Length: 264
Image (cartoon, rainbow, N blue to C red; front, side, top):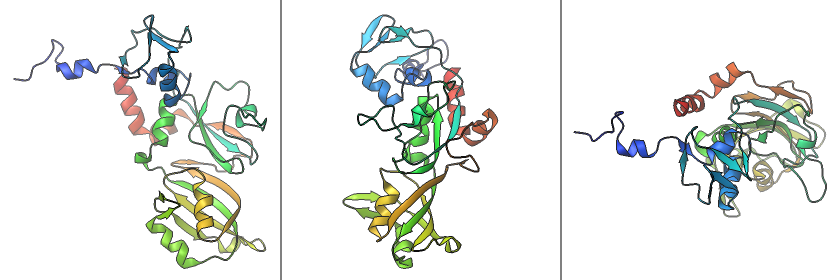
């Protein structure tokens, strides 16, 4: 017979009640999960008055969690915004060189948000923002294979064979990139420049630029038009718009089912 507790749980299930400590600050919008783990390792997080230095701890809503001596707020309802980033902005909180960041351009009434992944300094288009660090982590996981679609203006001679070969993946300077689909927008020629439609799965650092350079093309403009089910659409440059709760649950059902189960 299976050994259970009086509530019908096995000892192993009882041991892992709740959730990992790093998730709590992430849900409360204090930091991303990775940042929360670093805070823990630096001794900035306490649980029930005791400082911890390892993220290998499970907590529940009954625990009192503080960061730098201040209690974290209860987790807000998960929210997501679509933001149209313009070129010339950094996707970071601050820059030692004094360059502008997206956070300096966001509406002051917006709550603390973090980005889902990043866009390069000179890359434009759709950037997702959320107040839930755990959701950001979920969306960034390669295992979820969210497709990223870009419109790419390139300079150079297009080799159809080389572009087709990208569908099998490619290794550049020792880094393996997954399948890349490229289509030529023949009606969008601009002098010596040509527009391409590029779809990737991973979103590694400067992935599109490096792949285009690999096939002999120079990127002169790069616009992300979609990330998974979320579209840039007609959102104006610099514009921001919240994704309705209903759309979030329809698009991210797997994530919300897991979250609802955790809260029970």
